Image: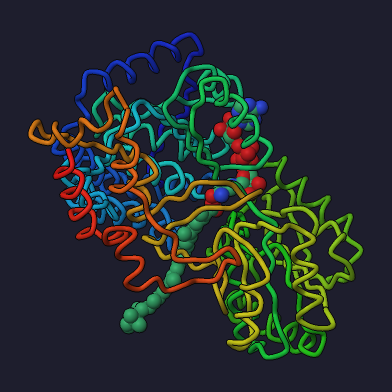
Length: 513
Ligand SMILES: NC(=O)C1=CN([C@@H]2O[C@H](COP(=O)(O)OP(=O)(O)OC[C@H]3O[C@@H](n4cnc5c(N)ncnc54)[C@H](O)[C@@H]3O)[C@@H](O)[C@H]2O)C=CC1
Ligand SMILES: CC1=C(/C=C/C(C)=C/C=C/C(C)=C/C=C/C=C(C)/C=C/C=C(C)/C=C/C=C(\C)C(=O)O)C(C)(C)CCC1
């Protein structure tokens, strides 16, 4: 008998406003401003994740048939490293920053940037990497000094229940709350006022979240999916393309927001690439994916049916895989040659193990097609030589890029979408930055009063002095060309925009007072 898992209980709707209000009150009591308090929370969270690792593995297995390797690497292990990285760096990150590029005349005001917590925030997690994509943003929110309400995805119920156990075992109950539920509970949460909402999921719900946030002017981070292209030029290595693109679609059975949705392959390379896919599939799953312990299942019946109809509606030719088992929600990694980007397998995000390949004449055609399908996908995967990759990068946009690979998630690299794939980025240092307000602080010393008096009425005779002290002379002409002003510039600007020059200007003004 495996590990016993708790049942998922939805939070009663009536208690949600009160829970949110407790979290808000806790923020206003300034408990989370103390960096040591935050560190203790994070350290306790670390040990709770560690102590519940077997439950995490079991919950991911029950929700998604996720293999232990993928759970330990991308869920528990990922979060444990995230906590250690954050706690190691937090003292450095919270330090006030010296404001950059300040003219010496303002340096006396000691301008600095403080990293203030935003307040009481909401994190709505996703089902596919339930622990990583829910607790990942929470780690940053705690580190930044916010109080947090956490809403795991009800679509991964076992994981949601284990997450609750972990949070309740480790985190301060006034500052950090878990709300469990589906659409009504999420809507009850969205009716509350937040200082930031962080949502990972699909674009349709993303729009609902952004609309709900608008009346309160609440900032939102949206980590959405993408119709991500892989572009394979004639100079690519077919073996690497096949092995890496197959990996991008077998991990979590393709339920990864960054996995490539379709491949645009130079027609001269198609047959070789297909052959290499077949070889790689045999190597990864000698007895087929269905009988392997290393292959996930689709999260629920509705996603299974959605995927089934995508394949049923495709006009493409199946070249590998293609089997399904509705009872098990199993879908085999399936390679399909299609003849248009309008095929059902390319035009929608599959979020499943389909690998449609569209042969193209050349790189220009591939770039045009990719920009036409979705010009701001979450990820983009170019395969080719240096010049090909440079050309692709210069003619496309995307949240991120992995050259010659499927999505390579370096755990501390900023991660996030652009345009239709969302906005805001997190991970590593960005997980802290996304949850703080950079609050500029100045402090004007009393002794500066005689110089600052230039700003007070009566204004007569003060404008020219003020301009002499503060005007920067452009180092460009009317055609937009850069010009060198040399000694003339020095005379007109009393030294120009440099810091030292600012002191000179300030001294001149003071002397004329
Ligand atoms: N960028 C990323 O990191 C990820 C993106 N995704 C994207 O999410 C999609 C599939 O994931 P799903 O879990 O099905 O996500 P989803 O977009 O349906 O979001 C599910 C969450 O939204 C809530 N929700 C659903 N309908 C709602 C409504 N009308 N009002 C208020 N709340 C509502 C649910 O309670 C749940 O918490 C895919 O498109 C995928 O690309 C999924 C995981 C990660
Ligand atoms: C081992 C040695 C070396 C180094 C080896 C290296 C660099 C190995 C790299 C392995 C990698 C990159 C493994 C990655 C595994 C990733 C897994 C299982 C899953 C990750 C899933 C993620 C992050 C999902 C995200 C999903 C999102 C955002 C979503 O859906 O929304 C040396 C250094 C060469 C030395 C010798 C030994």
